[in-house]
Image 1 (cartoon, helix red, strand yellow):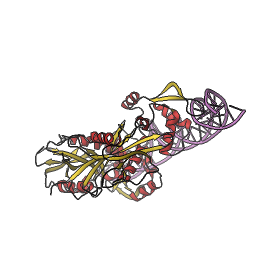
Image 2 (cartoon, rainbow over the protein chains, first blue to last red):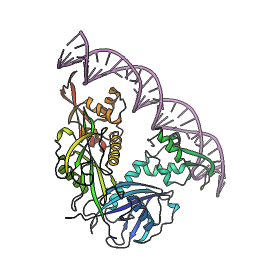
Image 3 (cartoon, rainbow over the protein chains, first blue to last red):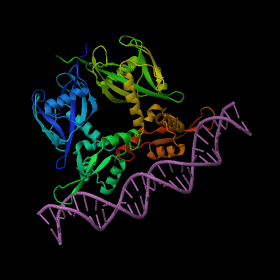
Image 4 (cartoon, rainbow over the protein chains, first blue to last red):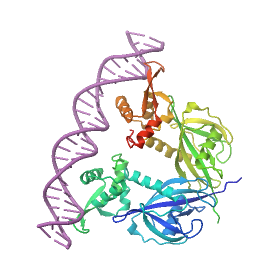
Length: 227
Length: 227
DNA sequence: ACAAAAGTGTTGCCATTACACCCATGC
DNA sequence: GCATGGGTGTAATGGCAACACTTTTGT
């Protein structure tokens, strides 16, 4: 019998805000199956687009966002994971600064929103499983590649980076040692500006120098070992 | 227009032999396209089998082998990677002890063989690219998870492990320090038997204790950091 | 003046590295 | 007896963890 399998993509897009920790974009499904359930943004791949193009298109269509970091996560192809047909889904993993976009539900989505990863609603299909894999990847990856910067503002006080790492790796890290380690990697720029937030002494701003990072990586310096 | 995409799996199966280093199983294609080219074993996924089942079936059918380690590698879905139709291929990564099996070409394969990764023939489709990704993964993974044992005999002299790591990470490692490090991980058993190979003093045999490894991993001891 | 957050150095320990000689066997 | 590969210990170094007080601002 002829092969009858469909190919879809799904996206786990993480965002971070000081007050709300790590969150994920979910959409509320407009149609069956799992009508009105929350689910990861995603959908069938078109015949002439690449997998990554498909993810970006779906994120634009369903949630109105454009991620600034995207990588393939894993493919899920268990028969029966979609009650209608056999669907193999290639899941992607994205990072975005939540404040850069106003989420807006479109086409197949009835609603869209950010959900803290510690307070997730029940998800459609095997999306809970996909999310778990993505969280594991995020935690693992942030420890040896500087992807954390994709979640922070372009210019940020050092304490934002500290807090991000605390939330993700939830161990108490020593502020002095953490700073020494990060600064020794050589791709974080100290700016002359400061920012004042709430009470306390104003904080100096820092910026991730992507170019310098790739140069250093090229030369084999640094390479890994973040935390 | 309706989606018209096929789903296939491809397998990069590595083996290791003292005299021939790291090798990969390739098959010689019987049919067009790329007739008579060497290619990775693989093929279309059947409607009711999981992706992993598909890989194992294809490896059995095309090469007559049964791997003892298998993990998903990456999915390749660029339009045009297969000249006939759009095919999304989920690639897997396997390890096997070459001496455990006699390769045997069957069904779609005209021939099958082990090829040293440093002397590869031209490959069909984008299989060279897939292979490159797999090699990178193998090198990366062996440095922090004990998958090297899947390539060695169940009982092996310590020098076999040494040589495997030398070949894969091709830096000269200090024999004494390497042994200290591995033994300190606590899951390598020293047996009472010895083996004599060629000239020289007989070598004591060792065995990877998988159960102990998982116990230790469970407890959070050790976990990573191999080399 | 006090509360809140930012900023900053030094010391001790342990893990990693560097390093070379003897042992058991086959020929 | 010599060639071949196997087996083993110690000392020095440097990277990492532990640790607490001062500064700047707002209220």
